[in-house]
Image (cartoon, rainbow, N blue to C red; front, side, top):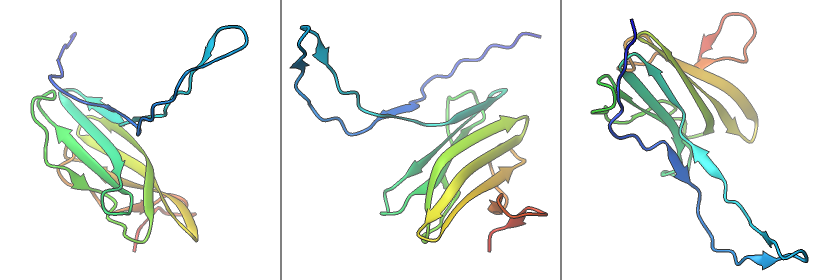
Amino acid sequence: MNRHFSVHVIVVIALAAVTSLPLQPADDATAAIALNPVLLVPIAISGDNIYVAWSTNKTANYEVMIRASTDGGTTFTDKINLSNSPDAESQDVQIAADGDNVVVTWWERNATSDEPVARVSVDNGEIFGPILKLAANGTIGAAE
């Protein structure tokens, strides 16, 4: 069966702070152009479900947020703070989805630690399990 769905409105790219730089002509009459970095918001799609995750620094500390849509992008849930870690910067978010399962991974960083972690949902992103520490040997353990 071939399924088609449309996403009504999703903004997935945000530009970093833009500064105006004058173009400097080079010796060969071409211009050197400085490019500003682009921050991508990771997305995952499974059927009609769409998930977006990102890091935000609105509290002077990076946190991982997620929003979900179960209707092809017509509506989205309120954002959920997945990391909620005031003692670490939560960065480099990745997301994957398959069926009802959603996995979000990121790095928890501070002066003494640089650790990969994950949270998993088995109900389309409604509820996420505890933070899992991925770098520990043996059984993956929940964060304390």
